[in-house]
Length: 142
Image (cartoon, rainbow, N blue to C red; front, top):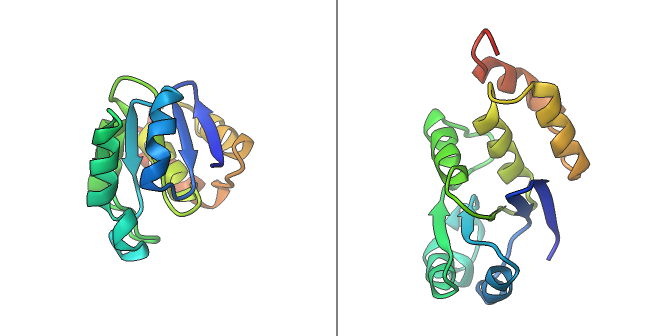
């Protein structure tokens, strides 16, 4: 598994499988955030299979599917809520990019935009193309 640390309590990853979850829980992850729509995976990795595996591994589970190009305020709020859950978190999608995008959008206004972009870049994700969107979500005085 290619886990990329964004913050001390959040890593992102490409698609994981149910059988990966016991090792992830053993590594200390307590929360799993699934940003991959069911339409992109087979039944062994759909959100119900991943929920069952996460719960069996003792992890809290959040399903917030992100279809490319279809970001909504509700998705950003749901991601912010999941990110506020106590404990080490792992968010995943096909490559980790969408999970990183949602993290940055959820953090808009709480951290400088340049810091969000730098953090993503250090993890291997170029979010420069959504800089205007991140800036638009930040309060005017942020």
